[in-house]
Length: 223
Image 1: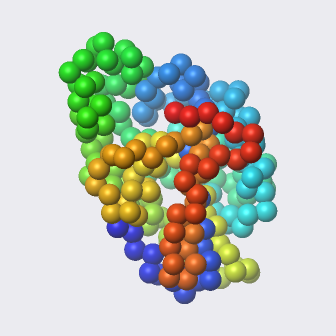
Image 2: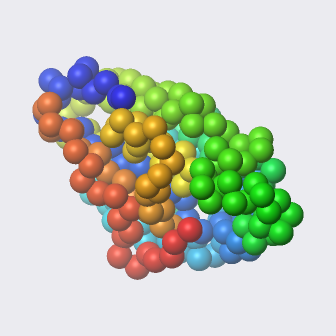
């Protein structure tokens, strides 16, 4: 679980998490994992539309995965919405997808039939070489700690609301949300659309997920 108690004295804190826009690897239907594909033309358009949604929101820090599809998304959004320049945060990188990396799920079904069936039952726990749940949970907790510490750094700025944005990937985002809910299983899976927005709102001692996989006007497309 995540400890938000150090922020309870603040009037309002908003944590925004964003999946990157559609990448060239997504267009090809590949399991990308940590392979470094850039945004596609559509992905750039999605990021621009999402940036417009963030205009006027009091985002005081922006963090991004070190992979290009996330960095490009964060940069475009920051430029469109006049947000701070994104800071790379290594712990926001996508999960390691093991032996499925670089192939499509259809190819995985043919090349690794038994493992593919295990993947359907257990998600990435069933794939050789893939990052395990305990590792993902550790990384997700590290992300939360970094973001909470970032809020503490800027808590004395003028205004009643503090916002932080983190751009990451579908695999890790599952666990950024799940650890706040006490979940220890991949299932049920959360939907992860292109530029899907997850918004956790902290109002005093009340913490709630205000948005789950929200896509800004003009954005569509799913994993």
